[in-house]
Amino acid sequence: MTKKQQNGFQKLFLILAALPCCGSLQVSIPEKTYEVAKGDKITLTCLFTPARPDITMLVLTWEAEPNSPGDPMKPVATYFYERQVDIAPAYEGRAFMSVDIAKRESSLRLTQVTIEDSRSYQCSVIIPSDDEGTTAAITSLLVLEPPSKPICSLKGKAEYWNNITLTCMSEEGSPKPVYKWQSYSVQNIPQQFPPKTTEKEGSLFLFNISMETSGFYVCTSTNQIGFASCNFTLAVMPPSMNIGATAGIIGGVLAGLLCGGIIIYCCCCWEKGKKDKYAEGSPEAVELHDGDAPEETEYNSQTNPRTQNLNYEEKGVLHQNDYDENRVVAGRKFEDDQHSYDSGKGRIVEAVIALTTGEIIMVVVVIASMTIMIMINTETNINNRMIP
Image (cartoon, rainbow, N blue to C red; front, side, top):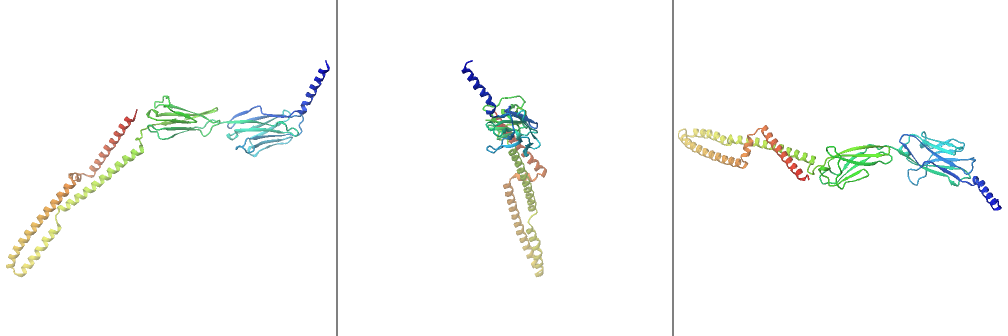
């Protein structure tokens, strides 16, 4: 062995001898991601390798990622060398920490995990005079939760030629669910979506809908731990098929006809009573005839019984003739006025006068039924023309 080779071996020996004292602290977590179902338990493991084998002082801390970026890490559990573990109040009763100095290992066990526990966790080690190297390591915890039953809803009006959106959303689920829509015809046969239909993040966009768009739509919410679904029945109708408006129109027609029938009935009763009143004659004429005759008879009898009696008879006859003539003229005038009135009202009023209450109601019902039938036929014709 030459002198040069001997010098090389000496340098290598010195390097190997100096490695233990010149190393640095190394902290690591074997698993980069942990997964656990909601309500179960999980154990996170942290390994550390100090620069020197003898450890006289050590502080090991588990911390959780804060809720808001920029905030400091939230302490979970802290271990002080040869002392008991300190658990943060927020994790008391469900977080347990252990440290094995000989194995250079620490574990954090979480029980009854919730969705709030889905976050990153950091394991950090502090050893005096050994602060170089990798002093901390981070891992992620994903709490799995099956999707809750999604809620299917409609945005827009399901009428011909409109654009609508079917939405599907699960309030719970970890990781975030993926949504998928399927369409079935009225006969429960799978069918393709209409042209230009798009689907994005649980929303199904339907354009220029028609009767063929009607059917059953099923949305399935899925993640790696489970799935759930909801159904939506889509019934596309013509714009005129507004149930509320149609019912309002029919109700208005019926109410109008009923009020009209009541008014006609009242008018008929009033007209009939008025006609009967005029048929009894003029009360003034009767009183004039009865009152004047006796007075004039009494007056003439006191003046000259014989002479005045003849004058009375002549005057009485003349007065009676004048009265009868006036009464005939008044009667003819009344008849002319009555005839003119009846002609103005028309024979329809006379026909209605003869109707009973039941007959009037029957007429109103018939007219209402005919009106509704005309509306339905008109609506049906419109629908037939609109259907492609």
